[in-house]
Length: 178
Image (cartoon, rainbow, N blue to C red; front, side):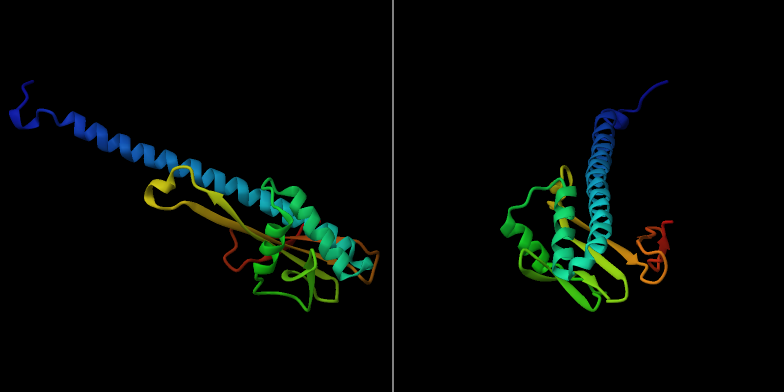
């Protein structure tokens, strides 16, 4: 097999292009893996905060919301100062806030709320995840958050019913985890 003179040296540019594409794909896989891990952590923190806070509602909304925030803070791997923690909750916005809102370190927040009928809602403030490889493209960080609800059964035996939002459901359908 003979090579034409115009095909000479084509291997190196093709190899460089393929290597660049493979490195970009590997970089995004790492970045999205980090983001997914942070999202799972935030969801676990939201779940524990909602369940623990709902159980503390008998002591009052402020006590329950402080307990919720403490549980969430304990379940996140990111370390925050009290000032940073308070600022996160103060800036947190929940589009579906319930009737009564909570406080975190004395600051009011919409992201911990109760409807007075047994439904307790928690939205974890957005967590920032620094990118490992996407910063080459100018994407320095991603953010993720989580939401959980617990419902107290007021009539009947009592207790807390945990709920989850299906990630695959386009309408955000809730399911009861019994």
